[in-house]
Length: 351
Image (cartoon, rainbow, N blue to C red; front, side, top):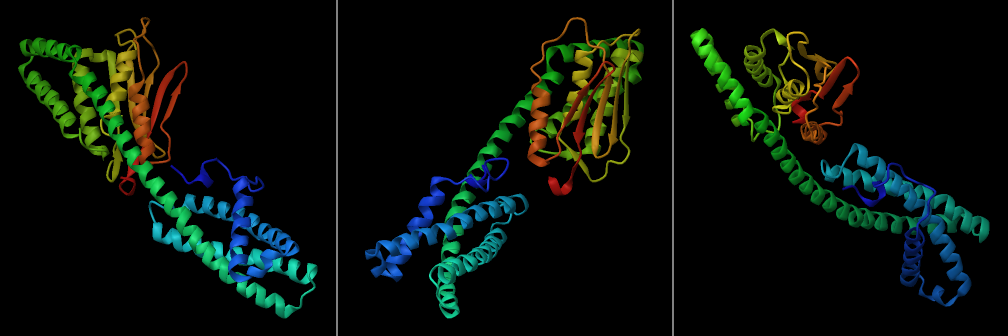
């Protein structure tokens, strides 16, 4: 959750809220009551103070909003709170004094006809209030914003856990459901009779697949190399079942230092086989390659005549989990020839 000044996509510098009026008037009245209590008895003095307070307060508050909006993009409170606090104080005090000088010149030299010495003294006194009020304002408002962000971060972490459970459930369902087991055990039964050596390899690859699922259940991201090894096991299993009707090309050579969401590639391969025709006359080709910082999973698009109901929960959850680690979006493209999903590669710093 962002602070109130960055909830919108852009900052409306010329949109004045009620608080932009009330806060300067209140501060101006309080300072007058403390420093010049006799001015409270003069209507003309109070009118002067009201216009003076608004002239300084309104532009200061709007520019402070803009400064905080910009700083939130580059120095978020949750990542560098101390640095953010110091920079906010320095920048906003500087801005406040820059606004104060011309306003004082207008009110005391032009309107009241005071001398330069009066301008210096009033500006010096007012600068003290600018520094103190800016410090207190940044401390108060951004402390609230910090705890709101911290609370939202905790909520987001809980949501991520639930999404992680959902994607794990989807992946496990695709692999361990009775249909999956039945097909692989049937293939294994036929293989034992024909080629016992291949049957042993089949059992090893099936074991590797289930071991990977169990080991990656509690991992947020995983090395691309481990996902590539899983794809080799799955490819072997599917090739024995579909033979030349299914072609899986894995072209991932440079995997060092690269990470990915666990079981994401496996799920995309499962979905491609599940939703497309796989036959000798219409072989399904799935290619997994790295391109421009993405892992691209592309298959020739030949949807089954009888469509299988899909909640798309797999794609949605993969995308949501990627948003937690990177600003790069997962890309899904579909045309008459190909269905393509592009998954952003993660580096160690993002994990």
